[in-house]
Image 1: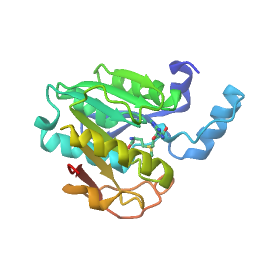
Image 2: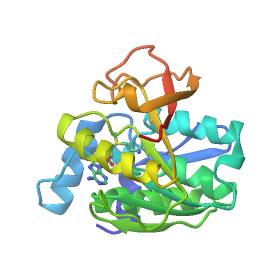
Image 3: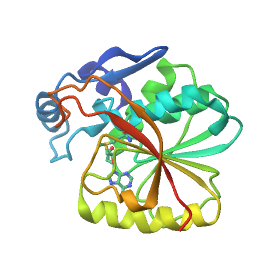
Image 4: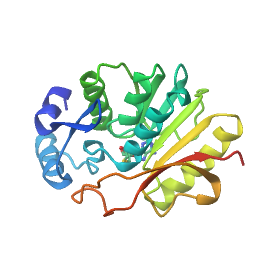
Length: 209
Ligand SMILES: C[S@@+](CC[C@H](N)C(=O)[O-])C[C@H]1O[C@@H](n2cnc3c(N)ncnc32)[C@H](O)[C@@H]1O
């Protein structure tokens, strides 16, 4: 689907100070519309929400731009790439990655909206290492098999010196024994998307194993 067609199904919203995004108020109507337009079965449109994981990363980067300024950054499982966009605003060279092509289309729409440039890479990069200095990992510990693969990968990246920052709203499969708390963020959840009510989101730093 072309980015322009995708844009017509989404709404432009200010999701944080100086940060706009193309989002949907709830997942199911968008999901149905996308499947009707494309004539295919699609994964849930996770890219159309500003997840608390990314919003916590956005706040943490705003509090300390030095975490990413001038560095090569991978926004892994980027969805709409809000964390990557803020890193790019602070002068990082950002690659955004997702397995969903519609996520990367939305990431580019959001980048244009916020006047930054991003590289995008489609596919499963778990296990790869392009020498990224920083990894931004927003809200990916929501299912056990994915969390297990990501955990082993991040262990290796942290061990060779990458800074790995995880934004997480309290997901069950985040291995708390591997991370140190950076910051806590009080964010208003959207009940149509977030299965939490008033739980804070946290930013964690992956420890060296
Ligand atoms: C809950 S969303 C989080 C999106 C974004 N990081 C945020 O916090 O707003 C999870 C994302 O992970 C992506 N994803 C799932 N498995 C992946 C994998 N193996 N590689 C890359 N992305 C993946 C999904 O397509 C989806 O966009």
